[in-house]
Image (cartoon, rainbow, N blue to C red; front, top):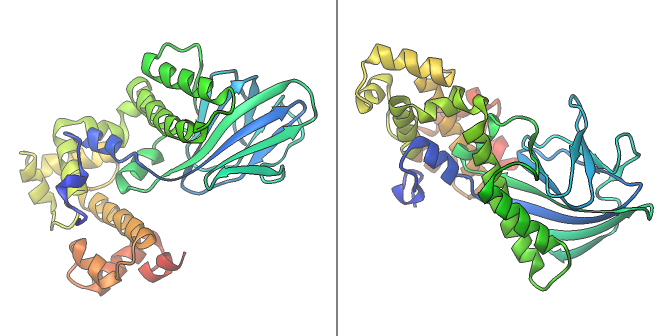
Length: 314
């Protein structure tokens, strides 16, 4: 399969493609059985989304720069940008690293921990999930720092997933780890989709551009065929606009010129390929439309600040 293989795309528009790209590449799940007083420090994890859901009892999320967020039973919160934060039974309670309590490894990506002082109990389902595809990273970049869905909110599909996850986590049953992790994957995507549908901030900028009939088609063309020798002229023709009108509208909606967006997207694709495959740099350069390895390496370092070789070592 090549980078531009159409079989990897199922959406019929740019927004659909962005949602289709929300496929988990790595995940780690935790069931925490906690008793007051308790507090857990969640470490920063670059490029990860943390989610937390109390399935029994209440707790608070503490994140620097934000007021404490109360999570009641059945609420769910996302921390999309990998920032470190804390979960506590009450604001200001002492906390320990989530790595400190001894863990029971149910599988290689699901653990159960017990922690606390013996008081009233809280059960949490948490996880760190990762979306590697470049289109997904573009979407994640525009999410707010904290996203909360309350159990009292009217949302039939999301509510059904929350209810199923709550019931499954209420006790330990055979196969519970498999059910919980799959429901959690669905839950994260549903929360992002609900935010995109309801929050005014999701109607502007890059997401607003995806919804635009012509600029969205141009972004979709770049995503599907980043190796093509796209220019402002060819993109404008592709969406039936004049060069000047397309250039101005793309920059206004996306926040950068079309050619800059193309280069940045190519480098996001390259970073994913370098991290996940054994592709050699010269081959990757050709697959992304560069005529030489040197030209690709210069563009990569100019965009990311490091060489392709250094990124691979990271």
